[in-house]
View 1 (tube, chains in turn red, green, brown, blue):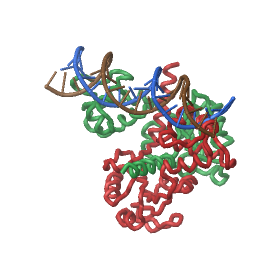
View 2 (cartoon, helix red, strand yellow; view 1 turned 60 degrees about the vertical axis):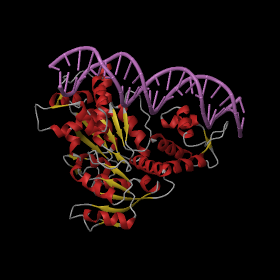
View 3 (cartoon, helix red, strand yellow; view 1 turned 90 degrees about the vertical axis):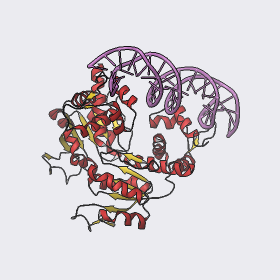
View 4 (spheres, helix red, strand yellow; view 1 turned 45 degrees about the horizontal axis):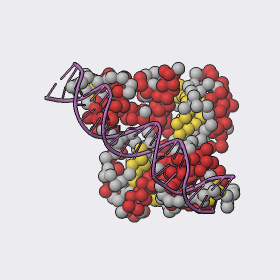
Length: 202
Length: 202
DNA sequence: TGTTGTGAAGTATTTCACAGCC
DNA sequence: GGCTGTGAAATACTTCACAACA
C-alpha cells in the first residue's frame, strides 16, 4: 500500500511533540487524501488509534514501520554505478529508513576496483558470490535495458527477495519476487499528458 | 493514463516491420495487462484499430504520441544539478521522447558558471528570467526538500505548466499545474512491504 | 475468419454516516 | 464532545462476451 509510506512521512512533521497525537483529519490534509481513507487504510492492518483522541504519533510511527517491513535493516546491492544508482546514496532517507548498501557492482573495467564511499566496486561476474556472502536481500538495477534481464535472473537464482528496477524493460521473474519499476521518462509523459488533456478541455 | 506510456514503449519492439500490425493480445502480453484492458484504454481516446486485423503499428504509435502530448517538443529546465537531475540527461529516452533541457540551475556557487553539456549552469535567482526568455514549460525539481516549495511557487508564478518533483515534499501549487512526484525511498518501501507481507502469509 | 469496440456484469476502491468508545 | 473503526452506499475500474465489421 503506497499511501502508508505517505502517512509515515507525514509523521516526520510531528517529530517534536513526543507524546503528541494526530487525527485522521490532520494526516489526510498532509497526504492528499481524506480522513475516511486514512482510517480505512490503517484499519486494514489493525486498530492503532483511540476514539475521541486520535493516533499517538510515536505508536503510529512504529506500527507503520512494522507494516512496511522497515522495522529492521535491509541489505541492498547496487548493480550499475551510474548516476541514477549513486544518487540513491546521496539521498539521506535511503540510509535513515534502514536500507544498507553492502555492495556495488559495475561492468565498466575503469570502475571495477575503485572505491566508492566505503565500498569497492566489483565485477558483475561476482554477483552470486556477493549475494551469498553478504546476505543481500534486495538489488537495485540501474543499468542498460539489454543487461537487466540477465542480471535479474541470476540474482533471483542466487536468492534475492526483491528488485528495484530502473531499466526500461519488463523483467521476467517468478511471481514470488516483487519488482518495482521506476521509469523517469514515463513520469514526464504523465505530465505532458495531463497538460495536453487540460488544454484540450479548455 | 500510465498504461498508454507502456503501450507506446511496447511498440518499440515492432520497429522493423513498418507496415506491420499488432493485436491487443500481443500488446497485452508485453504490458502486463489483458487484451480487453488495452482495447478499453485505447477506445477511450478514439478508434485506432481495424476489426479482424489489429492496430497498424505506425498509426498507433503516432496516435499514442498525440494522446500523451509528446507529438511536439517540450522545453524543460532542470533545477538542482545533483546526480538525480543529471541522470536524466544520460537517459537516451529523455531526448528521444522530445524533452529538451534548455537550462540548468543550481545554488552551489562552485557549479554556477560551469558548463554542463552545451549549457552553462545558472543561479536560482535567474529562475524567472530563464523561464521567460527560454519558454520553459516544465521544470524538474531535484533539490533539497527545504528549497523545493519556494522554487515551485516562483516557477508557477513565472508561467510554468508542470513539475517533475524529486524532493520529498508535497508541493502546494494551484490545481491547474500538474505535479508528478518521484520518491525512490517509497519505491523501496513498496518492496519491503510486499516481501514482508508475503512472508507473513506463508 | 479474426479482432476490434463496447454495453453489461463483476470487482475493487472510495466515500458516507454513524455506533461505539475515550 | 470528539474521533475512531466499520458496515453500507456510491463510485471507479476491470473483465466478460458478443455484435459489428475488415
